[in-house]
Image (cartoon, rainbow, N blue to C red; front, top):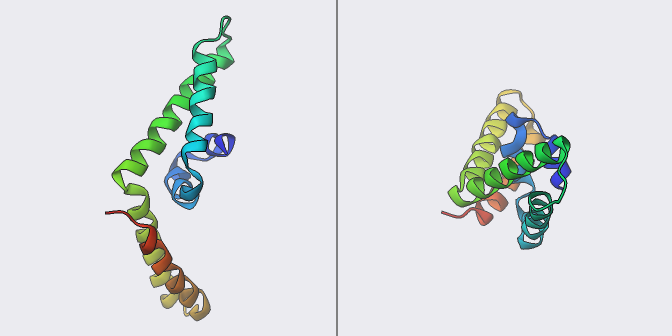
Length: 112
């Protein structure tokens, strides 16, 4: 999952974090911390290792900040509302109905 986030485009990262939020548990962050520790304390470091360390530190910071500030849930809900409105405008009734059913599930897991 770390590789997936590292390969995600910057403009998509917030959405992907929201989508994968339930999988961003203590086990995931423990794995991330372990890899960071291995890279930080490696006896001989290559440029690739230094680059990966920088990428992982930035990813960890983005994940933790997004979760702590609740920006992920708010952005996901806003995106969902925009898509529902667009579906109604585009006369895509089934898509709008489906997204309207998903919306309460998003609200259920939102923290204030």
